[in-house]
Each structure stands twice: as structure tokens, then as C-alpha cells.
Amino acid sequence: MSDLNGPSAFADDGRATIERTVEINAVKIDNIDTYYEIERTCQRILEGGYSRIALQFPDELLPDSASVASKLRDITGKSVFILADTSYGSCCVDEVAAEHVSADFIVHYGRSCLSPTSRLPVLYVFGQQSISVEKCVSEFDRLIENKDTPIIVMYDVTFSHAADQINNQLSKIFTTTIATKITKEANTNLNGQETPVPDTQLSEECADTTDDCCGSGACCKQPIVNKAHISLEQAQGGRTYELPEDVKLEDCTILYIGEENITLTNIMMVHNKCPVITYNPEKEEAHKETVPVNRLLMKRYFLVQKAKDADVIGIVVGTLGVASYMTIIDHLKKLIAAAGKKSYTFVMGKLNVAKMANFMEIDCYVLVACPENSLIDSKEFYRPIVTPFELEIALSKQKEWTGDYITDFQRLLPGLRDDDFTYDEEEEREENLSDEEPHFSLITGEYKQGRKYGSKKLDGTSLLASGITDLSLRNNETALSTLLESPSGAFLKTRTFRGLEQKTGEHEASLVEEGRSGIARGYSTEKDLNTSTP
Image (cartoon, rainbow, N blue to C red):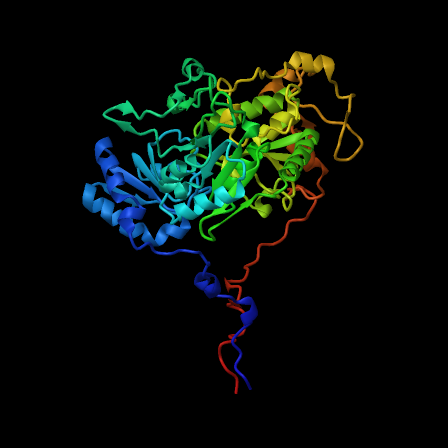
């Protein structure tokens, strides 16, 4: 008779999970000093007088992290730490992880969204991907017949080291060549002075206002683009360019150098009136982008209509490092409240379908994140996920869909925007909009009756409700008796299962008995299955 070794199918020891491997395209770099700019990094550390350095690597560059840290430690004599997995996208600077080791300086390696940081100084080291400058210029020359066409040269940050050479050669071929400037460090200082940033100025509105400040004071020091001659399209994160006075944006052609990624998608969404030509340095091929931008915009417009029909909106915090993220969250809360809707705030790290489906009472989510992580394809999610810009269009009477698009929420901050945006007054909303007035939904094709939250017209319990608007009152029998502006409580009331209930006095008391001991695969009262039988 064969030996019985227990129900192996139900007794996994976890070995498969521990030994499972994840495929990552990680390649060790031969010339570390040049690729990771060791000399420039050490010079910046010593000039700034920093003592605790945090290094942030993406997954594909982790094989070189120990070698880079060792070189920096030997040359500078400072304490160097390698940050582990980031809480959000690797393109964002992880200030939270850096503060866990009390770091006073961060070196960010690899691709970056170039979003401004709020607290710690950052040095960007993009890496130097190989590119044939001559081939790149010849491909653009071949595809653009009219040499008088104004061109705007943009590129992935990993090819920024060759930008000057490419711009110089293109300027010899085309009449008007507009170069893009990329920020290579943020919040750094030299001898106590802020590092000058071209074409920027400090925000007087932010410096003189305390209501819209994030509290750290760093946002008020963050240089912003001079709005006198830089438009929204010309300033995206750490990328800026200047148009000549006689050149219009819609007359320009954008030349993008790099692979197809979310950076290219953001550029095409914001500059949806301009033709785009991309060059892939790896394949050494250039082509005109035929991606239907209008179709992408219509998908986002569909999400705007979904947000307009929502009564309960979840604000998802997708970053803890981008400057002024607390300010934009406060702005969204005021916007949602002014529209008579209810908001909840969630901090849940990296998003996935299962995690977002736990909150059934939420009708729509708005994601506060960097431009590279804001455009979420929510087709597989239980509820739609929109950007702060899309939520403004959905909820504000002053905003209309024109086709112009903004992915950087910094452009929506109060005091930094160039429009005349104001919050809807509650008194005006109470007069012009009541619960009896439904609105027509473009999603369902029917009139939708929306519930309004935050109304001042309450009964005698208004004083009580003002302090506990997110709670539910229970009577002596622990039954749900009164709901005060709580969509979560209303949703709980409709559920058939609400968790364990005491039901005191409905069941007879039973005797206490000694239960089983041991583990599930072999309790002490069961037969020993490991012993063989003759």
C-alpha cells in the first residue's frame, strides 16, 4: 500500500511563491561613471553640503545601484542609502521613503515625470541612452518637406544629453526651431541661494496667501512659469519652451525623440492641434503619428459625463511627493461640495482593480497624481477614474469641454491659474437647483435625479448634523435609525449582510467546550497520516 503523505493539494508550503521570479528587462551598465554622471552628482553633493543621500532607482537600473552607491560613498564620504520599492510610480520622487532615513538630498535615476517636489532637494540623473544624431536629423528632414514649418523639439529625458546637438543640426535645416528646456534639479541650493530656473518667477499670490498653502511653505518657494509669455501648453511639469511672437502653436509640428510611452501620450493630448512626428532611436526610424487623438479625447469626454452623473466621489491620493498635492485635494473638496456632492479621500498606494472595487458606494474616483500616472484606462475598473481637470469640467458651470486638455494639476491650483474660476456659491445653488430638478444624462439617455449633500436647509437637528455629518445614529436597539448626510450609511442600509450582529436574547446560551488544537493539515485528534501502514 502506498504511503499517505496528507492532502498535498491543500497543503502548499509557500515554496512556489517564494521561488517565483519576475521578468524585468534589467541590464548592467558598463560605463557607470558616465551613464550615472558620478562626477556631477558628487560635485552637487559637496557644494550643497548634504550629508545623508538617498538614491532612487527604477527596477531596470537596480543591478547597478550597489556600485553607484559605493562610488558616491567613497568619493564624498557621506551616508548613502538606496530606496526600496516606491509607493507610487517610479517616475515620481519618493520623498516619503527618503524621509524614513532622514535624508537631506535625493538623487533620482532614470525616467522622470519632472513633477516639482515639495520638501527635499532633488538631482535628476536621466541616464544617457545611445542615439545616432545624424540618423535622427536625416529622418526628420526626410519626413518634413516644408522647411519653413516651425518645429518644436521634444524628447524623452533619457535622450536629453544629445538635445543640444540635435537642436543645432535641425536649426541649419529648418527656418524656425524651438528647443525644449528640461529641469535637471529641483529645490537645490548653492551657498544658501535658490538655484535659478530660466523663465520663472516666484508666485506672489501663493506667498501672500495662507489658505491655499500646503503648510510646509515649500510650495510658496517653488518657482512657477512666468505666465506673461508662457502658456499652459508651453509649460508641462519640468518641460518648457518659448514660442516666437509671430508663431502660433497650431502652426507648429512637434518632433518627439523616444519610444512610444505615456510621455508621448501626454504631449499629444495637450498639443492635440499639432501634428506629431516621432523618432525611435532603437529602431532608427521616424514616422508621423496616426494615433487618433480625437478618439482619446472622446474617451476622456465620456468619463467626464460619468463624473457628472456621480453623487459620491472618491478622491484618490496617487502621490505624496509632488508639490502642492494637498492644495489640489482641498480644491477638489471645495469643488465637490459646491456641486452638492459628497467626497471621500483615499490613500491606497498603487491602484489595482480589486482594491478599487472594495468601495461600492463610490460612483466615481478622481486621481491626484503626476501627469504620467493621471491618465488611467479605467475600462477594467468597477468605477470610472478621472483627472482633476476632467472633474472641474464635470462639476463647474464655468468650465466647458473645448478639446483643450490639461494633465498637470499644478495648472489648476488657486492663485496660479490664469482664468477667472470661482466656486459656485451655495446660496445660488440652493435657489437655482433643487432635488426636484433632474438633469439629462448623456450616458443613460434619461433624466437623472441626483441626491444633494451639504445643504444648509436642515431641520432642528442641524446643529447635531454639522458635527457628525459622516456618521450614522443608532437607537438603543442598535438599529440604524437616522442618516445624516452619509451615503456610506445609506448604502450599508441597503445591504443584506452588514457584518456580525449581537442579537442579544434571541439565542440560548451554549456550553463552553474545548475545541481542536493543532494546525489545519493535522489536528491533534486526527490520525497521523505520515506513518505508513503495512
